[in-house]
Amino acid sequence: MAADIAYLQDPQHSQQQISQLETSFALQRQAYQANPMPSAEQRLMWLKALSELLSNQREALVQAISQDFSNRSADETLLAELMPSLHGIHYASKRIKKWMKPSRRSVGMQFLPASAKVIYQPLGVVGVIVPWNYPLFLAIGPLVGALSAGNRVMIKMSESTPATSQLIKELLAKVFPEDLVSVALGEAEVGMAFAKLPFDHLLFTGATSIGKHVMRAAAENLTPVTLELGGKSPAIVSAEVPLADAAERIAFGKTMNAGQTCVAPDYVLVPKDRVAGFVEAYRKAVLGFYPQLADNPDYTAIINERQQQRLNGYLSDAESKGATLVALYPETQGRRMPHTVVLNVSDEMNIMQDEIFGPLLPIVPYEGIEQAFAYVNQRPRPLALYYFGYDKGEQQRVLHETHSGGVCLNDTLLHVAQDDMPFGGVGPSGMGHYHGHEGFLTFSKAKGVLVKQRLNAAKLIYPPYGKTLHKLVYKLFVR
Image (cartoon, rainbow, N blue to C red; front, side, top):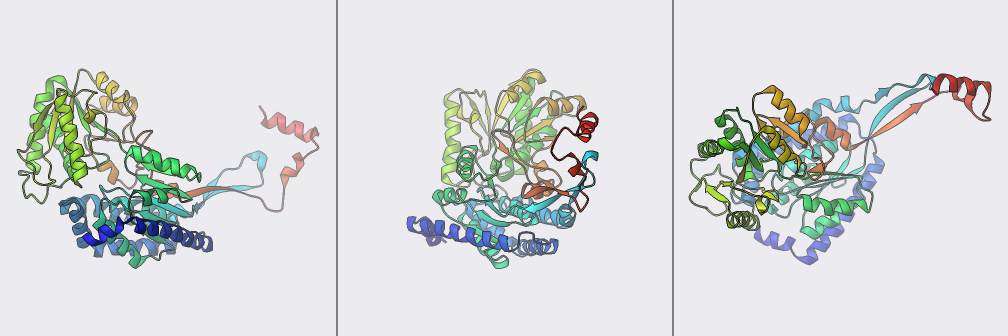
């Protein structure tokens, strides 16, 4: 595998990969034009083949992902990648025929006799750019939506997960021809060439900074984009919620994948007089999940040295500017990085400016829920927001007085796993949404169709204007 990775990084090979992108795109465009409206039966066959592939290759996928992370909890891969991928396929398979049915619409009395409907037509060739943190789920989720809508799909895997990316490429090639689904590998220059292809839709999941470049590249072709970005997703602990309840659920969301999750709680707003109690409850919850760091197969590592250096840089910067670091473990083992609570933070610290994407949790004290809302609303809109409190009135205030891509009340992360809800950001955390029916709609063109037959009543209002009938129409309908 090491030799393969070195080969992928060779500049000459990158040019070959870019040429292959153009070839794959041309094949898929031609295949789409030959079959622009695949039947429900065809789409169901595609999803069945994908489901069987994932089920049969679960162990290989778990091992490849763990290899890329140096250690990724097998259970986290099963729970957060394989399970939602399979459930998404099952959910779509049961509903494709219903989604594909034309939607009947009403026609104004003045336009009768006529009928109106909306048909859902595949867009064509869809591009999907996959990040490294959940390389399976964030490849398969968009693929399911695009195939359900009848599209051809090209996937660009992350260069940071070479073993997983290579395996997914090989596996998908076993069940799908290149003119239906193709997988591209390669470094950043290949990714940018991918984004510049004239797709009919492009979905990117990743950092906000990279999302701007992707959107700029897509704009050259007026390619519509769905951007699934991130940002600093806050958790708000109320003045009344039992701290053990809030801390345990926040710890679950923050420790999953070692915090390398776009919807992980990025920081926690805690009433000033409850900070010490929350820190202790959070420490207890994390240590309950992972009693030790060293050699713990459940404890996921940081994806690579560069990301670990970035996270250590946040800690050094914060400490130099007055923060207090509370490490929950005494040591680091390889890329297994200790979860750390960060107190006395300020806006000048990098940890409070950038999305953390790791096992570091700043605590921000507040006085009064209005101050917590103001803190959130003064910052870029996050991908997720989490509120912990059982007062239903305050829950409604959270929903009405803050903005975010999605919300969990008294939980974290799990809204993403609901197939019957859209997932997506707002503003700096993204645009557009997918999952379930929304994914089908995102990758379809909702085409409005007006149908008339032989009788044409509209002829009565054709020019020349000024006839008595025109005056009657204006009297009845222009008022």
